[in-house]
Length: 119
Image (tube, rainbow, N blue to C red):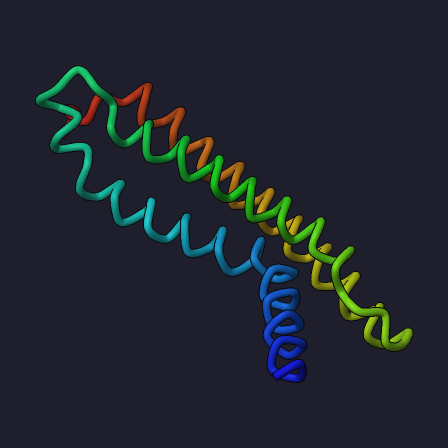
């Protein structure tokens, strides 16, 4: 039983190290799809749903980057090679999450500027 708990903990730690890359990219992809659908509803209402979803996605992507950056503290320090992989993963995760956060913020700003009725 203890071996299973240890491997589950190790798996969760490794997934959280790369969360900034995979989760932030997934949020951005979902927002891109919503950006094709929501402008039609934005045109008919006063709420900018495209902007709301973009800013909410940016907050989630930023949180995923923070999870990646802080997850390395929980990683086991087995060897120098494992430490190098952990540092690489957390850096790539955090930096890619910041890029996706910036893209989501720019999509949110564009959704505020463009009302959805421009077609």
